[in-house]
Image (tube, rainbow, N blue to C red; front, side, top):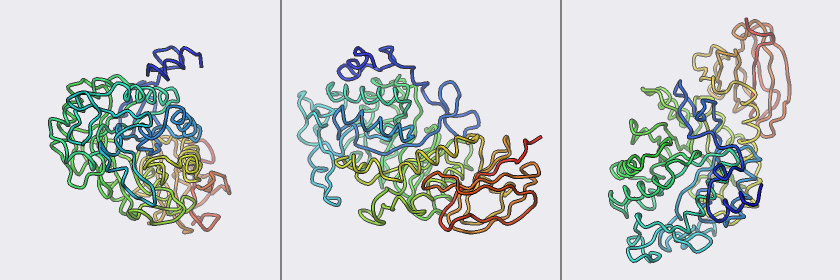
Length: 446
């Protein structure tokens, strides 16, 4: 990278594309013509797989942030899901104790608060925050992070105000103010997606609509969605106002699939995806009972099932990385990240994933409650995720007469077995744990 470009990124927050350093991010992202996934501005399908380092903008310095983004990009992530501000505007988050971990409070690592009070000083209490008085030093850092993400071809799922922490403390007019302030600053940021809400139990729909009005009055050019609480979809609260829907679910796979299918069948058609689910840890359960061990089928099943039942993407999470990133160098190499962002993506991008629809009518592969199947009528191919070592019926007629089967280990991405089927038969995975099956015509479809 040329030194002038590096300086623009690190000191002035100027987008790398404006400095002439890299090809611009092909944004803003759009909804596909069939309403099922996201595309670049050019119409090319955008494969969405996100990490959830919610506090990245406040918890790491500039050098650490670039390193974090570079590693996630190399692993295959195409987006980061971020909160624009620290977890609290007072010292509340600093007093949390989640397995000995604290939240990021008041300032970023340079000691900059995101907004000033009415006197132009860092606020002492949450109620002192004025969203129409941004602290330029804080937002220049955010500018630089968004620019580096764009340079790496990554999008930002960007939440202006984490609702479960803040909405009850601020008026509807204050919500409008932060929407207008940030909307005016980032209305042309090509790799940004605006996100209302954030885990709120008693959803402040009226306040969300005011924040949205602030964004609209700022004439933002990007897509807008909402981040719901676990066990819900954004469609439970808002619909017409949103460009696509987001689902958070950590129940059973069946519960998650049912919730996603409800969105998938809504009219008018809009994309939907699994924005948050289990966080990878060394053990199951833990704080809030949101952990799963990343090397287990129980961890992988939600991601695969969501994608094959019509979700356009997934939000992965590592336990420490969502809260404050104090141990991010230990957590960033966890195996679940590669299982989702590297291996799952590699398998699906070898196919026309964007043409795939849930095989609910079992045209491609016979049914089993623990087998999740999507098919592409265009390429006559199918993908199945087996939660368990169970059998299904496969008739190669739909694949053109003969079907080529390739089995993959979803933990490593490795191909474990291949075979060709010429007549209807029962098939089973070659190993005892979860498996992924890719079925393609053994000869080109006519």
